[in-house]
Length: 250
Image (cartoon, rainbow, N blue to C red; front, side, top):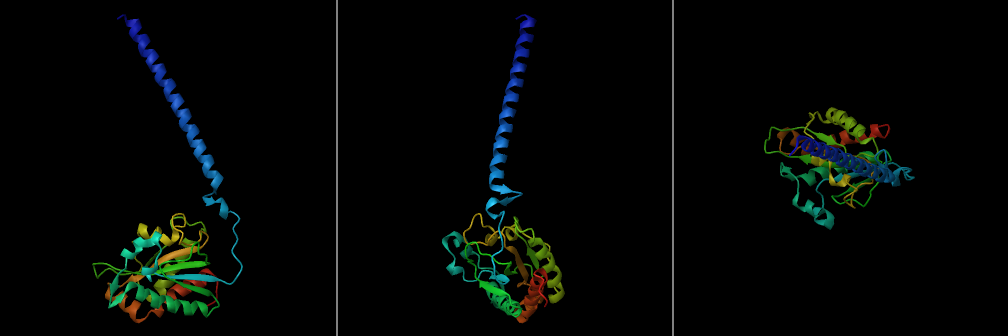
């Protein structure tokens, strides 16, 4: 075959490839633009349109205090998987028993300042709203030397204030209990089911400031003594956090 025919075929093939790439890129750009337009129709700066003009309901300050793993037998079908997560135990106590004792102490402290408190089990009301929501848990480990507390805010925090709540908690809780902070925050904490209103009906309203706290390790002797013998200490640490966040004189 003459060389000029080979060169011509090569040039035609190259130009054809360029034309295909341009058409593909143009189509891909169009698809991206369509997707972007679809997002902006439902969200602005990451906040769904239905909450753009949201206003806090009238009424006194309200705090939701959830007791981790409490009343798991009553969870709805969408949360049925929780029945397999009974929590940790130590010192002859189950996690929910320790969390409940702390929650009840916390409830008394908050109510003494006029705050309305909802003591909540594993199942919370659909789209539950409060000025602050805190889920109380206790940690566990096969290594009894592991100790400390930790807290986490939701992955998607539409309030923009939950991390501030966590920061206050880290300072106040350490001061009140004398415990050290455990920095091992898991993805499951940040993605706690009660935070996931997109997936679960029984979850908090997205404009609720929230955190989940691990009050200490029930499997550690030092933490265990504080959590079981003096539940008022962790309760006071959480209460001080909420008082400071909500600007309540305590």
